[in-house]
Length: 306
Image (cartoon, rainbow, N blue to C red; front, side, top):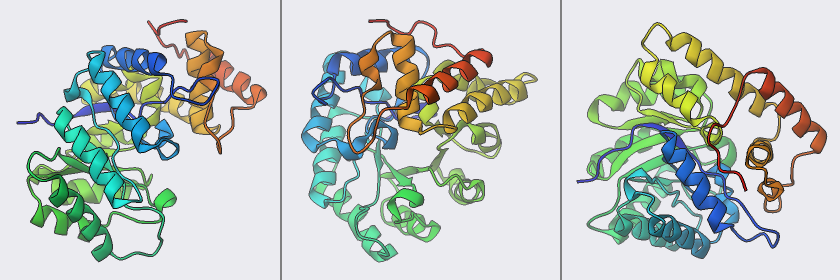
């Protein structure tokens, strides 16, 4: 029986080498540090540049993590794809590897599709993967996909596949939507993860499962402390300090900014590399972000230097 993931998860940044190929060694080192800091790993999320990675690259990176001793129980790979067969292949691989779950985007190329069409997509993946399918977490990020995961769709999927549909990541940034998901479905075991730690305390108070947040990549221990201590006297201060760090990263293009900061703490300029069409952070913006983070007392303790 797969143990459900709760707590804080990082949509893990993907490092690239000079030829724009995934840098496996740095990827493993980053994942090890995150796990040591108390985070689980939503590899191949939006902030992983997953849409810029091929199926073969995602499979290879997953295998490399497992071979390096990263526990499958800490993994929630992103397996959604525009092509149904790609989603099936990625989900089947993660399931056979024993991943704790998979985070699945809806098919995102065609816009204006109906709930019937999105339901058919998820149903086909589940049926084709078959027995042993890893728990599926629905990925709601409508500002990017233009294909929402509606409450009505969640209802239909839970009714048809109650043993497989495990929860959702809500990246809409709309607290009222996250709250509605939690209020309606959390009591039945549907685990809702807002996509920013700014919602962490208020979501946990009503039954949320944690967060899957970009900034867990750099600030895992502090966000983990919010998760563990939100209801204690120090909880509001821990939340406020995590919020300050989040706002600094949000003030710049997020993926390049995160890679810029990791590069600084790792002492490795190549960490700043992103795959086109993204571009590296402007150095002046990077200097401003690092200055503001230093003023906020931000650090990445124990981060492996190269």
